[in-house]
Amino acid sequence: MARVYCLFTFLFCLPALCFSEPVLNYWNGSKPAGRLSYERDLLHLLLRATNEKYGQLAVNEIGSKMSTRRLEFELVRGDTIDLVEFAGGNNHISQLNRQVREVQGNVIRGLLGYRIGIIRREDTQGFVEVKSLGDLLKYRIGQGRDWADVAIYQANGLRVVHRTQWEGLLSHLSLRQFDILPLGVMEVPPLMRERGRNHPDLTVESGLIIYYPFPRSFYANNQKFPITERLSEGFKIIEKDGSFTALFNRHHGATIERLRASKRRLLILKNPAIADSHPLAQPFLLQ
Image (cartoon, rainbow, N blue to C red; front, side, top):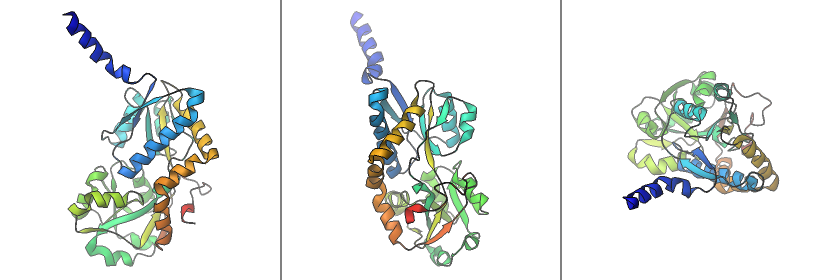
């Protein structure tokens, strides 16, 4: 009986033994592979930059699928999730729980606001003729449910059809529920490599790039430890020593170079949540 008790005690305590230091529960799911790996590497870079002052912090990465509303709920509650990446300037979360605060640092330097579209092959010629926002108005924009982008497209007068999370959006496009699926420039190639073979009727639109200011930030629940303060300080450190730029270029430099060389027609949309004086108001990555 004693042997059974000892085995039970060991197995019960095993998760705690795996992490000898405090654990940060970080949600990093329901995103294309390129974003997952970049944001993971960025978080670890920020933690390494602040280890001397704050100490070691283990990361428990959670990859389960959740809607934006469910994520907000779990972050505000703070039991299972401590850190999430959302659209910047989301004051709604902090109003629900003052322990949840936005980290001061632009996670992806505005790159997610540069959008290229996936369309049906039969519509290719129609999109060749899109030269302005007015030309785009006749097409229905597809986006994921609860995505922050939905409000941006709607504020610019565009019709938006929002469906499930991003994994199922190609099927909705094939079924003619909308006409174009604009996604981040770093998201489209891996998505089409992974799922395009199942949708031979779809292709990447080759002439347009849609841009809107779209900062992304980490949001942290600080009831366990001061993670917002720590990561904000980390951003200052890695900006100053150049390691942030090095990481960004390693993950996204080739994408930006291809974008600059593509000679796509640029359509700039307004983000009603971002002031005209904001650093991302203009597409500086194309310069």
